[in-house]
Image 1 (spheres, one colour):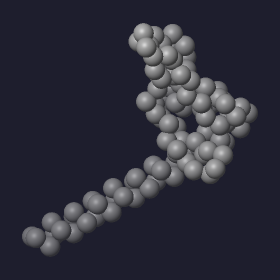
Image 2 (cartoon, helix red, strand yellow):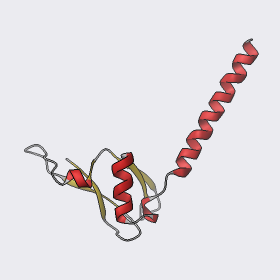
Image 3 (cartoon, rainbow, N blue to C red):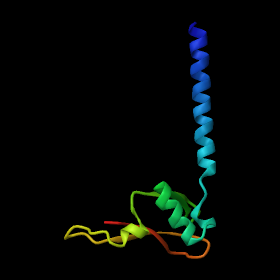
Image 4 (cartoon, rainbow, N blue to C red):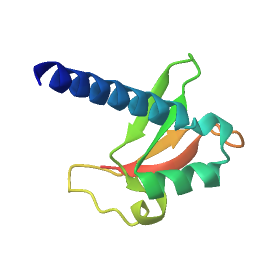
Length: 99
């Protein structure tokens, strides 16, 4: 019974790792999207990944999507900042806003 339990745990862990790998591979970089596509993906999924000019891949999340963020009201001592990514048609595509 113990061997069976360990085998099931090993298979489950392996499947979880495989699913995480497939998920990471499925994440498309904003660099290969148009600006409108990147905005749409960010609005629907809440995150995107972009490759910087130095080649580092960064996850982008935590902002208010661009369509809703235009009316974002920040506190008195804070200002609204655009979250920009590189896309195929715009080197400074604003996909979200943060305070």
